Image (cartoon, rainbow, N blue to C red; front, side, top):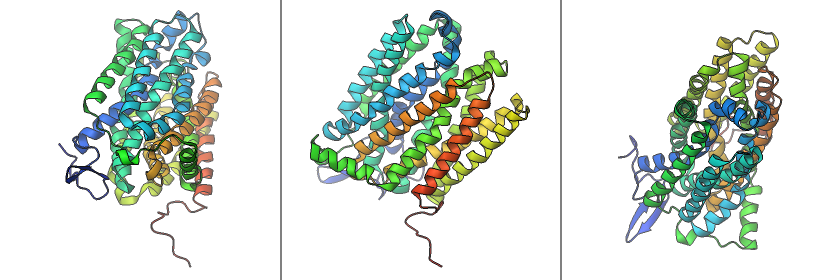
Length: 430
């Protein structure tokens, strides 16, 4: 089965040789099957963070009454391991290929999930979550590098948007899954379900995922090779600029995720509806990624992502103004937060695609750099925002204002003051 209107002989797909025929590097999988499998790999991150949110109150009681603003540390602990390990995954993936690195990463993730399930100590849980994130980095890097192996240009952005459309369904259903597990079992089964998911992905990947990195493109881990890759990444204004933009922008998103449960439960007294409310807000993010996939080949990555960043800044200012005026009632907060999530979906795929676009020769290392920087920077900012939760929406609203405005400044520096302008169509001089 293929995506409507697409075929495997698209000129923007990177071929691999099989006998005398040239096949797409995702062969024997069709484009649709390839997208679904990569989306499943990327889902591991959203599932591992969001499925636990409904379990926070029960976990707090079981772990000795850990306060809410301390308990949310299990999210940045995971994200820290997830981000830092990506720095190494890319080099390993460029040296040994995508498949073996992915298999090892999924194995580490599964074992850490089992350890987290049975721990009785908060500090031990934080360590298990860090290791869990270390293993989960491989699926993220491999998925992104595999897309870059197989596609180029706007087609790459469209495929990544389709991957993210499926991936972004997970924030919608993960809290519902977590809440459903809690209705029948304890919070430990919420963690146990992550181990089961890891085993499932391990089996599916071993059986069906092809090696997308051609043997002739593998790079030995040598100082000269590392230096070349780092020069390619750090010496490229577009890659560095859009990576920093992504990390800054998503800091507010991580802060929102860490604060969402106490906001819904304490501020709006709707804790029993948390999973439904969180899922409803996340729907906007998934919807916008689908919209992006439909529009990006027509309008381009810069037009959509730059416009979404400006819109997010304005919406965040409105939320902060309503909050300070005492007018941010639930039915005001809900559409504003949903509108911000709509902008997140338009930014996420395009910032990543723009960062990766110049790095075809070192896709694995580039995916590591962009992923690690985005996650570590975003998690650090998010930890600060969530750690300042004070029983109001003010820290989250202010966080969105600061992060979206800072992202806009980084974009202006990266693009030398010219937003919305595709580089293949430079502006005419007047």
